[in-house]
Image (tube, rainbow over all chains, first blue to last red; front, side, top):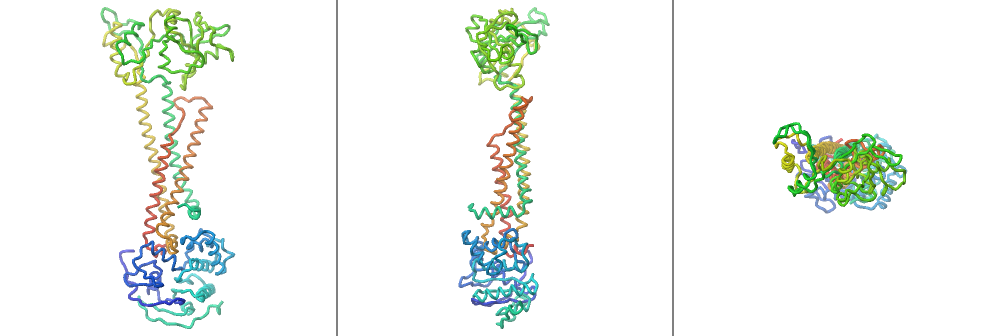
Length: 221
Length: 419
């Protein structure tokens, strides 16, 4: 897009194992969102390789990319990105719709995940009838609905106050405890400390990559 | 393609912004309504004017005598003259292209004095002396009995065929008219038939108040000898009466000793020419109808395109989200296309129904209040309507396709970034 392209990432090499909870940190412009978008196949790298669950991700056309995203990945956005004319339940069911799951099963699964994030009673509310924390929990349920291999969260707490942030992180830690691999982009240190591994980016390169002692969010809630 | 889930998705999206949906739908609705009404009204005008010609065979002309304006062969100018019965025979003989040559005579006239008596009843009617062919030039429905025949002509029978208006005035309700006698200018004629003029307009009353007599009996009863009032001439289908006209007039002038260049001696009215003129006018009118209709339709199309463009722009982010969740470009495209398709079809149908209702109302009002001059039976052919709808639908599709394409061409990450 645009005439003036910018080299954002300048050589990134790292692996994430199954079940990890990784945070990617860095100041704005460091390339952390670009990295996440490439991992999410929302953007393409100019060069390099990317292997997801032993599947080399290359030469994607948009149709295959959509299929991979649907099967392998769940997204959590800073601004939630719920579809505002669909109820919480329908939002959660949307990835299943694109998988071709039939209606009955879709509703059942979506209800299951809504229940998991504690929003079953709100299933028929529209997004604008929910609080920020609730919206993000609906978004998390939606990301989980297609049972992806990896959850990618871009500043999931960026639009939330501290208390709600901790509630959301508690939920994310719980999901990780169940064995899901999760990558979180954040620039907040206290959020990063709640993950198990912190990758620091600066000007498009990794400056350090450490496993840390996880701080449980429960103690703040 | 159209599963229930699809429907839900489409209806949800259309419901999400009711006002916008309504505006789009209204543009289409209005476009097609105007188009259909415009064509129907043009048609109504055409039907009305065409009906004013009655259903007289249009490849016909009327010829009558006037005063001469030039002296010729020792005869003075300003002379009055008549066609004679033998002119008819010679015309038929000289011009095989002519289908019918009917001499006619007339007595009384519309709203003249009373000229017909039956018992205590009197009435003023137009009385015509005619040949049997006349019914083929001006078709009428014989309700009872028959029309004049050649044996009536040859035997100079005193018989008559009367219109429904005559029956109404001269007979009590339910009374049998056939076989009874009416007295026309003091001469008794037996009723052998009744008629009504089929689907003519305007002159309906005059036509219904007409009595037809055999030409020969008419001449004898009212002292017309073998004089002919005027001629109704119809050519065969292959020949245009207008092209024959100069030769016919020349032949008549020659027979009646009129100067060949005397334009005023013989009057004529060329139905074919007049009809052609009106027809030409209506081809132009119809063309204008289609042209304006097409323009209205086009503005409707621009309306849909415009709104579909905005709709898709507005939903770029939503489309980005859907793609992040795994919607393939084709899924997105087909949803947008189906949205615009359903919108145009539905509103087009509503527009057509609405226009049909208006046309029905017009027709109903016309039926109730009797005929209006120069306007009848506004209608439009189904094929035109469906072609218009088809054009709308196709352009609705195109209108959705262009923005849908650009929305799915964009990288998802860029689509998501748009606020």
